[in-house]
Length: 198
Image 1 (cartoon, rainbow, N blue to C red):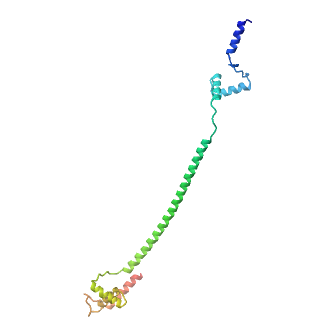
Image 2 (image 1 turned 45 degrees about the horizontal axis):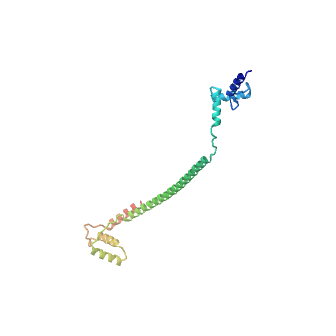
Image 3 (image 1 turned 60 degrees about the vertical axis):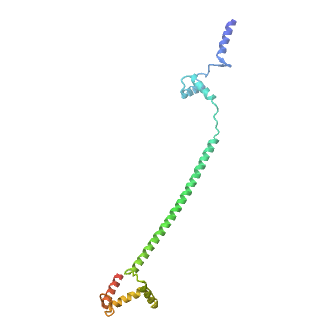
């Protein structure tokens, strides 16, 4: 073998190797390594063995992904804390609203009771004042009527009522335009008493 041939072979051999690594990969045809390579290449969807090797190299050379999740965990814990505080605030608000509702129910019950009591009092007043006549006397008449009531230990109304009935029954002292007999007065009294008892 000549020196030129030896140099040519050496040059060819060196050009196909980089740092002593050949461009060809020997997977030992039919071996388990060959089968795994074919499967991974198919799963990766690589068109050629060269593109698959490039994908593998790119993946290998990607910077190492930091697996420190402490910041994410801290953010999630803060969100949980905020939501817990919010839930506590809502719970307190709900309890306050329930207390307000109970208070309003009590106020409503009290108002109803007062309304019923007032209605009963109004009925009593109405019953007590049925047939009542309000009379505004001149000062002189009022003075003597009050003096007479105080002297007889009665009310001015009772005195006027008695004088009116007496006048109705006494034609001699009657200053009224008509006279009513005692029998008629008793009849009216009995009728009114029956109406009250009904």
